[in-house]
Structure formats: structure tokens, C-alpha cells
Length: 271
Ligand SMILES: [Zn+2]
Image (cartoon, rainbow, N blue to C red; front, side, top):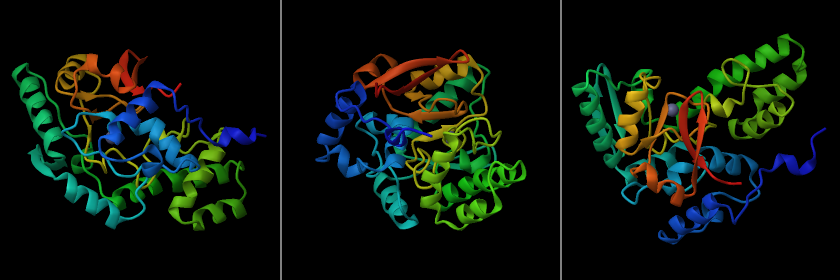
């Protein structure tokens, strides 16, 4: 049985990330509680896992909320942020203008060096709509539900109850089950949030994320980093986030360096 307070990720207000976030939001006349309700465990988890985008350069518009509740909220934000489109291969990808400019520069540099930076899974590599995030959620949630029912870790009644819930209520229930090792990622070995974002929460909705096919090439990662694109979500290996900053500026933004599988991640320092 989990301790009651385990269901709520700790929000250490004096940690480097919270202090940097507070400063960043203050410049826009906002407080942390305005974007992430303090008692919402999903919102806090999202803030800790994907929060790097909130402390990036001033040339980007971070989302006004940790969790968007509808397509309408997402479209309003994406309109305000501005969308730049580019065709790479067969895919038309869209990003915030500053993010797109930096990506195309990085790509040109890679091409000049005989390398490539190309979108993974077509258009989905960059901007996503609210509906895209719901569809991706279902692509992990539904097969995992069937699996755990088949191996009798979930009974049919409970599985049906979960299936019938509104998507926003499925997320906290899944996070609870994952504490018991009932994982919902594609390979069922880790949290679903390391596989895809909860509906309404992706850095792709923010148009500040790009999934690159060439993520395993150290030279490509170096070129992306020198153009402000960093890996900021642990375990999501192809996923890069536009922060628009130099690497040596990241610690002052409350991000800490973590190395996993010889890849460098910059994640919120919430400890
Ligand atoms: Zn991604």
C-alpha cells in the first residue's frame, strides 16, 4: 500500500527549478499556481517531467497551463504563439517561429557535415493538436489495458471502468497503477509518460518539440544543442526541446544535467 503522500509529487518551492520558474512567470505577470494547480498531481508530474520548456528563452511562448483541457484552449494558444511550417522530406512540420528557425539552421549545418536531421513519424514529429495527444494516449492506454487484463493483473470490471472514464480521469488512475508496476508505456516496462505525454500536456502542443530520427548520433545531438535544442525529457530519446539558450546558461534556468545511455539530458532540478 502506498503512503498517502506518495500520490503527490513533492513541490519543493526552494529548488533551483521552482525558483527559476517563478522568475520566468513573474515577467509575464503570473505565478506557478496560475499554470499548475498545486493540488493536481498530474499537473505537478507534468511540470516536473516536461517543465524545461517553461524556463527557455524569452523569444518563445510557453503554454499558459501545464495541462490543456480542450482543443479550443490549444488552438487559442497555438495561434498566439505563431506557427512556422517547413517541409522536410515528405512531412510538413510546424513549430513556433524561433524554434523553426533554429531547427532549419541546425539541419543545414548537419547536411553540410554529411549528416541529416529528419522528422520521426512525419508531421507528428513537431506540432500536435489536442486530438493528436488523445489519439496517442489511446494508442498506449488501450493495448496496455488489454494486456494487464489478459495476464489478470486487472479484472475485467476494473478495466471496463477505466475504459469508460473521461480521458483526463484516466491519467491519474494510470499513474496510480504504475506505482504497482502495472506500466502503460508501449513496451509495458516504464511509465506511459516516458512513452507519450498525457492528453493536453505535450511539449509538441507547445510547438517546442521535435522528434529526430538521428537522435543516436552524437554529432547530430551536438549540432542540435548548439542551436538551442536539448533533450529535456528523460527516457524519451528521440525527443528534443527548443530552449533557445546556450548549454552553459541552463543551470541558471533551474535545469540539471543527467546522463542516461551516454546521452545528456537537461531536466528540471526539483530536488
Ligand atoms: Zn516528442
